[in-house]
Structures are given as C-alpha cells and as structure tokens.
Length: 407
Image 1 (tube, rainbow, N blue to C red):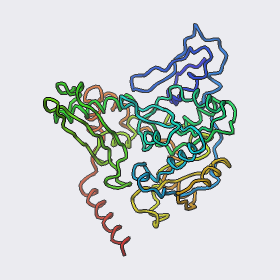
Image 2 (spheres, helix red, strand yellow; image 1 turned 90 degrees about the vertical axis):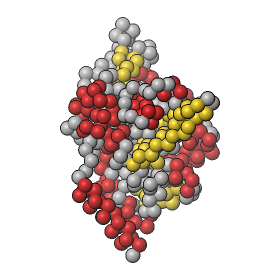
Image 3 (tube, rainbow, N blue to C red; image 1 turned 45 degrees about the vertical axis):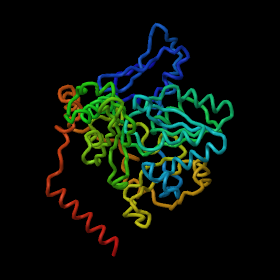
Image 4 (cartoon, helix red, strand yellow; image 1 turned 60 degrees about the horizontal axis):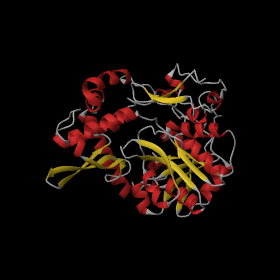
C-alpha cells in the first residue's frame, strides 16, 4: 500500500491512483496546495500495483541524448504563440495528421491547469505555451492506455516525472506511443496559483493589493486569458499577462489587460526564486533524462552565445533526441529548421536538465507569510529587487551587446 511519509518522495503523478484495481487511493491537497495520494486501508488488498508503478520507487537510468538540436518553427504565427521555438505544435500536427491523439496541459474553466487530450488541430492552441503550475493528471494515463489499446497513435507531453509515471503505469512499450517531456525547472503549487489569481483579479478590480475581492468583483469579473510567457517584449524578457472584463454599468463591461515583465510580476518572481516548488522538485528522480521520454524539448537559453545566427529574440527551442523513435519523430517534421548543437552547451545554459532546484532559504518563511500577507505580499517581502547599480549595469551591458551585434 502506498504511504507518503516523506513528501520529497512523491511527484504527484497519480499513477498509483489510476492503476489501483480497487480504486482505494485518492489525491488530497495538503496545506501547501499540492496533491498527495492517500489509501483506504480497509479496501486495499495489498496487491502492490501502486508501488510497482511509482516512478520514485523505480527511477529510470540516467542517459545521454543521441542528438541535440536548436529548432525553430518556420510558421511565425505558431512561434509567436509558443513559449520558445514552436516544436511541440509541429510534432502534434504530424500526430493528428496520422489520426493520432495528443495529450498536454491546458487551463480548465476555473483557470487551473489540468491534463487533457485532443484529436483536432483546433484543440492544440490550449496546449501551447508554458503553464507554471503543476497540472492535475485526472484520468490521462487510463485514457492514453485506452487509445493505445484501440490502435491509435498517442503523443503524450508532460513534465519528466509525468512521462515517467505514464511509462510505469503502462508497464509495457506500445509501438504507437510517442512521449515528449520538457526541461523542467520545477512545478509550482496549484494552491499558490489559485490564491495569486484571486488576489490579482481583486487588485485589478479595486486598484489595491488585497486578498479580499472588491464588491461584486469575484462574482462578476470575467477572466478571459492568461499567458505566463507573453512575448510582447521579446522571448528572453517574457511577461506574464492576463485579460479581464469588468462590469462598469448596466450591460457594459470594461476590458483590463495586465502585462508585467518576469522581473516585475509577483508570481513569476516567486517561481523563479523557487519559493513554492513541489518538495520533490528539490530531489527530482527524473533528472538526467531518466523519464524514458523519446524527446526532451525546452527553451534554448544561451543560443545567442552558441548559435547567434538563430537568435532573433523570437524564441528558439532545444530538442534532445533520446531514442530511435525520437529520431524518427524529429526527422519527419516539416517546416522546422533544425541546427545540430552540442549537449554540453545545452546543459551549460540549461542546468535543470541534470540538476534539481535548491531549496531556497526563504521557502519555509514564504508559507508563514502567505497566511498573513497573501501570495503577492509574501513574494514582495522575500524577493528583493536587485540594487540600482546592478540594474543599470545590466541595461548598459544589453545596449553594448546590441551595438556589437549590429556591427
């Protein structure tokens, strides 16, 4: 029977919940807003399946990729709406063209992040773009298995631990399964995201930073869009954005659009400071390509130093080919420009491929302050702006780089 005594040893993939033949395991949210499995001992028959499918108890072997590429989707509209170079969309369109099904993370009607699937090109838009929240898997593993058993091709995308959980859940290799994970910094708390969104909507309604909704705001304000990686100011200097409709009179609404740079937005600052990552992210069992995925994709940070000819600040993906099946997937793409690159360069600028995030000094303090000040207030108290001289030096450095690039 699965029993969580150390929260660092549960990634929250839900494989145990979906595999249990007695359905005696349920996911419960803890005080930090993360889901953990709890088993009903009175129903459990001690079959051990929950432990057999756990990717923490059975981690994969560390690997080196067969090949590494810098990649850019030639469709500029797709690249603009993607977090980096738009490779996932190209892979998904190929799958759908062959009659397959694509799994990915999307927002639900409450703007929480869940895993879902689509078999149409129109449905792919919901999966595009990074979602800096741990997604709820729901029945995704069971659904993927059902599609595979019916002979459908499945492209499954997720965090490395979610892909590892799927592979443990399936317990066999299906010829129609294609898996893609991404270079993962860590997954933030769904509970923190829920609170932040509530605070931000309230702040936009009444102009004050408060955790209490303004009059009628929580009921009538309509959240219409969220983007963690808005490229209005460029790929490297991405922004958090959301759009709201607020009631202003009888039958009329006022549209509000918030767009804050990653250095200004409270939620992104807290995420990038590792304040509310899942405990297992600080001891990730899926680093070093242990997930078993066919491909690993992500932002090619540092591409300006390695392949400056590709860097137009529109977004460049890195693609790590981990299996022969992955090589077939990437080799069959149309409209994607692939430039071979070195794995060592990828890791140099993307250390999260191999290293877990460190536990920040302020993590425990954040949870205490969150109760008192809310998410925005707690982040503001713990994440300080860099000193003025450092910000000025950074701006000067960027200006010099742009001048040298033109020369």
